[in-house]
Image 1 (cartoon, rainbow, N blue to C red):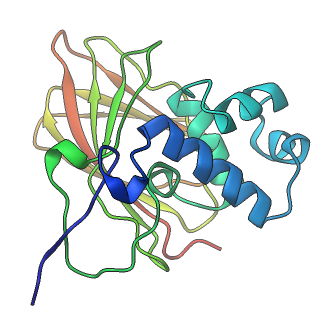
Image 2: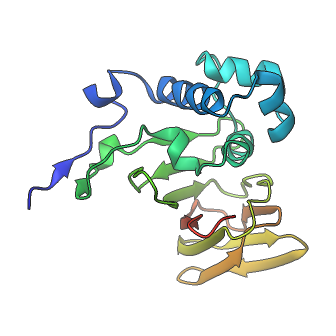
Image 3: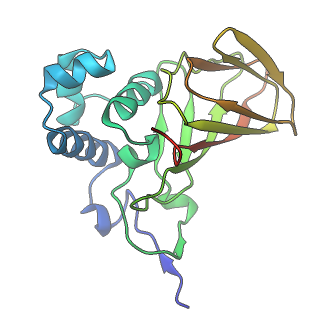
Length: 203
């Protein structure tokens, strides 16, 4: 079996486009596929029309919270907005070609590790939160979406709805993500954690 190498944000499969240009095209394409105007998507996502317009023109890098709201409103996972879909089943994604999004305001870094395959509802992301940093609140997902966390380094506070849980290095956490949720680094060093979002049972 031949192992294919996925071509990411720096290579020709993305047409030589930057990550923000790929994101802009995916948001615009998926909005139009659903027959939504900028105003309608803004209402569904709770994001201003002007911000969506800037994102679609690759003039603004959305915060993690804004991007999660758009993904939820469009019925897709975070990674599907970061990477064009591919059809291959065996994929190598070199570290240098994994889509990375940095939230300039908070320093929150998200690296997408999973390929985007049609019909799949799994996101695998490596997150890095700076010392004492916070992701801000993520909008509730559709019913049936689950999240799994494994802390590689540091201490993480996860807030899910009204509950707050401290996740230590080496601990794992599972929760149903149909409630607002947020994460904060409780330490003085960067906190790294894997996040898996499973939307395969979403309804």
